[in-house]
Image (cartoon, rainbow, N blue to C red; front, side, top):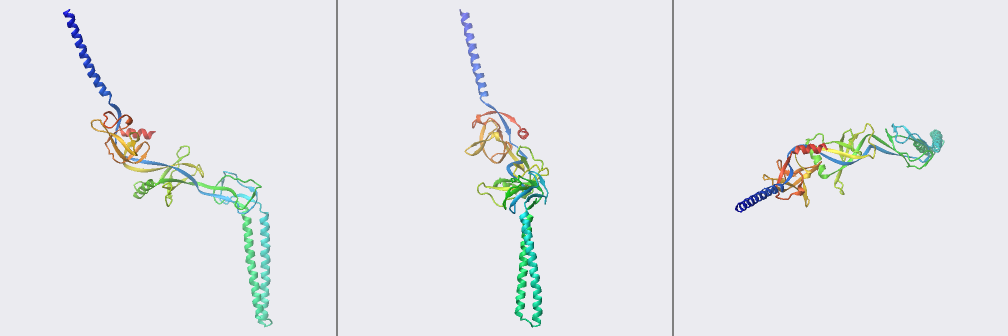
Length: 381
């Protein structure tokens, strides 16, 4: 009996010891597992190119409406829609019978006025001779001179009418004002058109203008960069077509508007793009991409940032692997990063992901990720 009691006591003691040890070990595991394993990155400064994209409106360098300058029936359409034309090439023919008649009438009136003036001129010479011989008074001479002046005035009037009739006749034959491409032709042969009726539009698209609006802040950054001469290519931009592909020709900012739009707080820039293949059309859309060089930019991943009452924060990890909220002021955002203006510095370790699972003062197990790898991965996308 004594042996059995002693054995039972030893077993109970052993089990109790094992139980205590188990609790201790279990407690340690629990403490370790309570710490989040989170990716952490160290902030660095890096020279980078800051890209801004803006919606753009593309317009032909020259885009002119072709309108009828005289009324009449449209006799001929000498070009098709979408075709290239050369300067001076015939486009339309309006029936000219009426205008030819008016020209002939004006020509006859000019001939008649010229003949009358010739007669009055001869009469003046005759009257001069008679006055010299004192056959008639000088009053007759003044009357003859006045008649000749009236006749000469009629010549000028007839000549003006003739020139006007000739000009109107020329308007019946409509030519291209410059090299370009014909737009839609709304009227058909035989249509009765009024003066001022739209016949078509001609666009010169050997080059195009791209108009886009930038904020006042971005405008000031561009001007400062341009004046400093730090980025000689700051005026060069790229065009992204509507299908997302890059336009192969580079553009250049030429000018900008003289004042800001009060309703939007933006100002319009105009860029010039060569268009040798005629890919871009008047009225096309797309985006322009403007690049600015930024030296020693301190960047923080967008995933690491959270907002509270319109302020930006990150979780900074200290030497004891505890996290602390830290506010910072971003200068701008590009891709998946913020460029820091103030509040953070190179060497700060910030939690990259999982910020929604931690609180101020939490202790974590950091898993370090190099910032260079994040930049490479992001730009690779």
